[in-house]
Image (tube, rainbow, N blue to C red; front, top):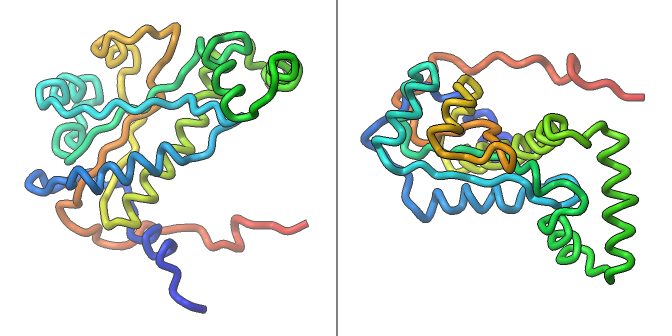
Length: 213
């Protein structure tokens, strides 16, 4: 079996907690990571995730105070906050209308039927008609994009760490977010490891994970 470069990148990847503060990701390379997010799949192709790249050092210091003082918030080369749309995902919103029209090319009658029956029916069947459950569904799309970003970074020899440990309401307030419209899904840090891990992260064997029927 030939070496698979992507699997090698996956083996390289780990949750980097200590970044080299003296090494920065070139802008052109970080844009590639952002492009991998843009090209990630999302349910119904609605692309509900947005990406806030926090460049200002003082803002990163403030965010760190609401992230259990985790050092990677300020020490990593880049900090990205992934947010998930909520209000725009209701069937009758201008956003969903524009997205479906752009992606499906349906005429007005067919588009209304698609929104009301297929998309609206999906939300109803999956109990996504209230804002909290709609957010929960939207967040799952953000995690797909986050995975794409971290995998792309690893393929490029760049380290990353996904951060779920943060004061959500506090960071949203700091950013002045309208939480009716969107909320934070998770944070990602990118950069270069300060040192290699002492040993590879243990993983379950494939036979322990996969079954065939």
